[in-house]
Image (cartoon, rainbow, N blue to C red; front, top):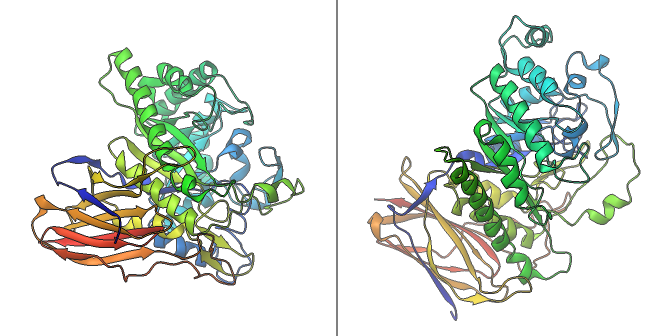
Length: 502
């Protein structure tokens, strides 16, 4: 074995508690995420409400704690009232964000029912593009107020006696983007977001609110946007959002696998900006981060340009993910865990069909994309306390980044289960990587399993015809001797090493 990396973790050197909501996801009224995704009333597995049972099972397999809804760009032109009440009386609308027809067969109440079935919670977004504080006030009254008022009684009339008690709300979406319906300057957005936050908290003081950060780190106004928005909203919001997507259009795999270093930098810059505003305001309150859109997204761009407008649920943003995409998603999950002290929510965008870990055929099967696996492993085994990883690794230079470590890794200690889980990506495309982990402060431990996702073909993907072409195995080489772990991480691989303490 020619190259080797080491990692030391100590139970007292804590990054922070992992908020389970960093394993959240996203369902937007876009493409086949809703219609043909979570909902298809004529499907053989559909329940009485039209929700696909096969999709629900795959979602439950991910143990998704929170799902953002209903957008996304969609929300900036959405009238929530269109999606409640008798379905046969709901209007069809021109949906301008994605230039489709929105039939409103699924709305707020149906989505909340789906959340219960999926064992998840909702992160609800309000429209601050074409609407404002008044409509947000009406929506939260409908959703969260018990009874005795116009909108709470309307909910009860619609068959929902008990309030939905939605805790987490997004104040609009990507309001800095020129593509956004009702796009705003930072001052315009900060003012309307603050006033909206005030009225929503008057209706329900228990809620948490997410202010829009920049649409990506490439926006020319980043991070001045964050500084201005937080200056105007600081006392009334709890989170600032981050959005970022990555791709490999130039087919440079070594550079692609290095892009999570940019994600690290993005997170740290937003933390610094939020802390600058805190210092400026002499505030005791810390603003945390909601990375509520992240994923690989680039495969479907060409196909989307060829779609005719004004269809219902056309196949938009249907990236077919390959093995190297799964490795990048694994690196991004590790990036989130490395700042678990401040990143308290995150949403892989999206959940079904639209740049998603789950794909379906209309009327047919559902299957797991390659990115399903690292997401599932992190969600299932990445609960507890993230620990500071002291890593020594050989490095390489890529087009956009220098000194890229071949090893990307972090450890999570779950005190309740008495387990430590190590997530590790070997970025080396040619060679396996020797890996030694020193758990010196934990005493003796024993191996539970070493899961590996590997494939000789970086471009191998799962499809309807071959749904298991890329899937993990548990034949990893990890060995445990006392508090030391030794393993060989195959080239271009995602690894999960789980040990039992004591």
